[in-house]
Image (cartoon, rainbow, N blue to C red; front, side, top):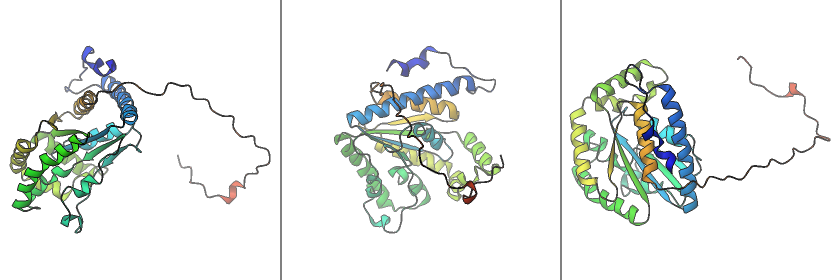
Length: 276
């Protein structure tokens, strides 16, 4: 696991704006993603069950980190869960029920892009739950997570912290960029007007749910690139693993000989126009 700490011996390179240079960020991200692959092999071999929760304000950079973590991993055993608004039926279920259905089995990793902490955040601030439901969540959430860890599950919780100035800049960038406009939901705009209420809700949430078995880890996310590297590095250090990547040379079989196969006329097939 010595490769995981390699960054500590190399100087971090910044540009004139104080951001990470591409020449540093891209190779370092690739190195960390390689370590993630090694970690996934270890999780599968040892039958571990890993749950990562990603919480934080809107536009705090959670999605970007999740994408960098998952893009090089096998999606069959590393799943990203981003649940939509609960249905009328789900609203009548035990609150944790629809989340529990996505918890990992042996050898799997589940990344929750927002999680059961919706109740302590947006539901509380926007009035989508009653006071009784909110108070019950604060009581039962630590018990729920203790149950998960007692069962052998590894639970890692991240809170992405972004300043109001940086969030405002990202909101306006989304509004002005067609490919990002979908990221700016009506709920995001409402949350903008309730910054202080969200801050208070987060403080109460931490007070009740920052338990020994599943601590909160705060990621400073004003600089997206640093946040991605720091979060991935922390995740790697949170799961002790060994390099069990397959080392056997892959032997490719000989391609089947073409003896009697006749390809249909190309004119009989509909090809996508080659305009590029």
